[in-house]
Length: 411
Image (cartoon, rainbow, N blue to C red; front, side, top):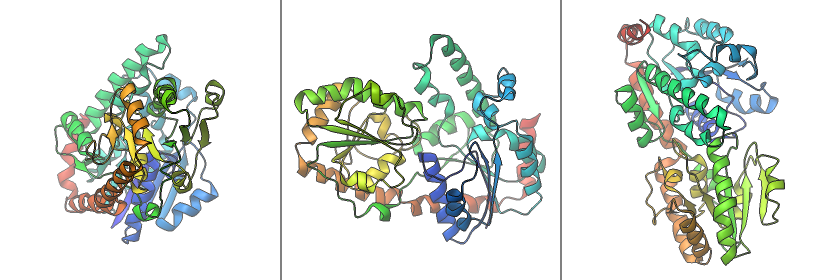
């Protein structure tokens, strides 16, 4: 199939779960012989490593610059009631809109749009042409906005609440238009279905199980591992909760426990604020296997969540026992006590950590159950097959069938 695929970021390097998802789905579909044109609006220039990683997978790679967040246009457009801020920042882009319209003159089997916040430049062209397309929504941004609300200054919180209200209106508008909508978990599919009033497909997040199959965690190391992209408020909040509340309780019982923190955009001031030798600030690691081999378990105290967690799937694929929260396990069909251990209470999490670090046999049991779950349910080959099934349904739609859907909403 000839696929036109749009993204509001370059999927390399894989510094976030979303980028990891995009890269691996592109790789899987390219290996299946599909011819993909990737149209990207990026806040960073295309680097040589990114070009070398992506071009072998694609028929064409088209990268257009995104204006800076501090652009006066973003400030001037911010009061517009129809668009939330993320749609403004990633939209109102004439060059992107024009390039997309040019590409629509070519024959496509599939048009795939990623993220509702990136939809604005494509909306009118798709409505005008009446072409079948799918939209993939990784998480409901109107819900995720709550993750940073309490972190904002008091004067900004009403603006954040207003923007979340705008985003809910935007989601209701956008998610009703595509011929097919894709979510990353059954839970998200249910929420999106409530907003859009339609059936929503699930294409799970995944993991390269072969890449992690030979990792054996250091179960006696007393070392916890957390991985996250710290551009996202949910990961910032998780680490602050861990270091302010949970780990101090663990250290009362076991002062030897260490926490290794890896991920993109690690805040520099944290090292000064939590100046403790038991905390290891690793930053972004393109290959996690060596860090996983030196750690006992994966700890993800997430209190805000959406989609499903690539970082948790990667830990499970590496045979690491996982301790997390209900939000951390959301989107994954896992059972507390079988595939992971979890609680939403800080004292209970501290107790689980303390107990599990003294039970290597239980850690092995959890690690193997998680590894088996990841391979059976979340290998990227599984996700790619689910996406291809959606693509096949799109190819069966005639353009005339799609025209009323967008046309009615444009009025």
